[in-house]
Image 1 (spheres, each protein chain N blue to C red):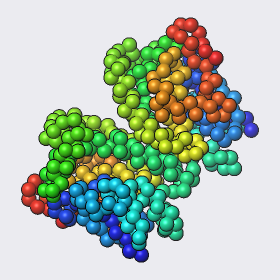
Image 2: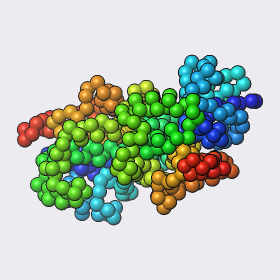
Image 3: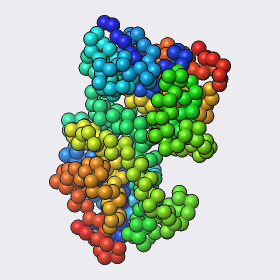
Image 4: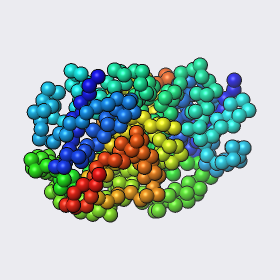
Length: 237
Length: 237
């Protein structure tokens, strides 16, 4: 068994920040599968051309090339049925709803706050591509994405409310142990953690307490991920 | 087996509009269980006093008094394990997330738009109670709840996005067949349908198409629910 995961990297290739790649790194750890990660930049389209699209995560399992984090998770449960399930058998639709919630509610609320931070850590060859595509999404310049940070933080706090309630009464979204339903919003918050030097949430927010539990999983896989130390001062490893 | 469900009613007791009661009416149908519904008004606290709280749904199964729609759903799966499960075994946490999403994102977006409609159909003895408690929640008068309906409709459209995506690729949130994960947001939209004379969603919205499928379930249980005909002109049955 030899797996390879194309994993979005900053200019400093130790910084790996894609929310979708984080879903899969946690998923592989959940299933006890090892994969060699390959640093990948937004403009490295050629390296993953055989998937017929231009985004990571891309997982290569022997000679199979897989893409789309959701499809990769379903694949891992199908191909490795004897290992702990990522998505419980009866929970595929419900987990898929959480993916849609994360992508339409949580990601946009975070994106405005961190998009300029992301741009500042990218490899030089990625910067134009990122600026052009993201300014089109935002309808404004990156530097103006979060003009009213206080209002954007309130918006984020509101967007997190279902997650906050879900993890107030129990350890993980899925229950006593984590599942792919947890790795999805974890990816979003880890995206933020890996590109910023500051915290967006209060330390006593139940979401923060859950995120700390997530960072501890798998020998601190998430916690040990390098992040920027402070603007222009290298990397915290 | 003799079940009784206390079910929130308007002045015209045929109109039953509680989103939480609708969850349970659909849940009982899902499990093939019959219950006699008892019309209940906000101020009928005495009738359900033995539950130690003042809200419906309250389900009486033989001599057990149950309350809280989520707990009732868990109870029904536990007490009637041979009938179709409402919440698949591995999907409790994920379904609970959808409940929190519905209550913190969908309900508030709908509430502002329909709160004045609700007030207008209540029994006279419920009106003061409703106005006082709801104006406290809203921080303004009922009549001012939706001062900018166009903005509120846009907000609702945004709040529905995860549901829209979830039911675009498949028939129900839970997959090929409905589960409690579907009955939760169905309850919210049926709440709206049972108190208004107009539609809040475009007929070609995937959410509307899913809602139509939900209305068809169990011989049109939801579709045949009486609703106001038009302001001050009786009831459509």
